[in-house]
Image (tube, rainbow, N blue to C red; front, side, top):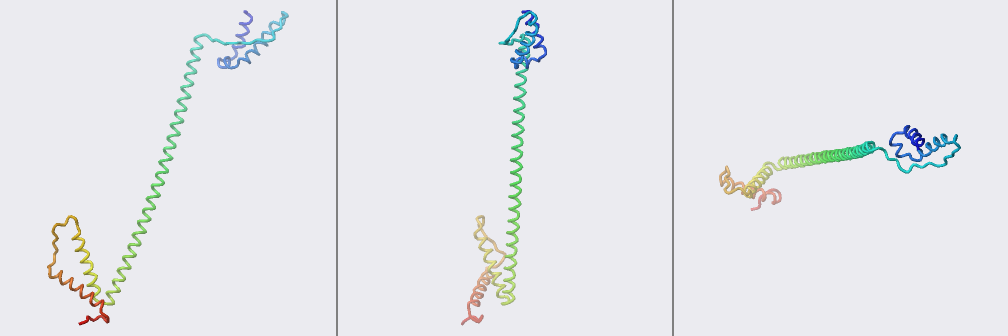
Length: 199
């Protein structure tokens, strides 16, 4: 027994604890070689050695348990850190995509607004040109018509205002009636052939 214990210490002493616990077959083979070599001068042939269980001392078992616990905690912390990192990357990517889409939306909206303003300005310019041509072609009658039309639209907006209880105009009632009469004359002139009012 003394020979076996000594030889076992020789074999296992060259290995660290993790190897001792995980490489039992290798230990069996090395121990068989050492013991067979030591017993062959006595005429004894060892054919098989099998270590069933390795029980290290309590302090080593406690150290191993603490090491395994520390290793598991280390792996858990690494996995948690990797998860947090992946989540942060995905969150940053999502925010980046949202900002890109938002910027593209603002760009498209600004382009559409500019296009609408351009079309509105072109329509206003065309309307001004048509009015100018009408004034040039028919004199002050067309100008009076447009002024009366704008005046009537403004009065209608005042009347439709929800906050308006009383409306005060800086004109006399006779001027208002005269303006309305002027509109009637313009309409008559426009509808009468050759521009003359019928009697």
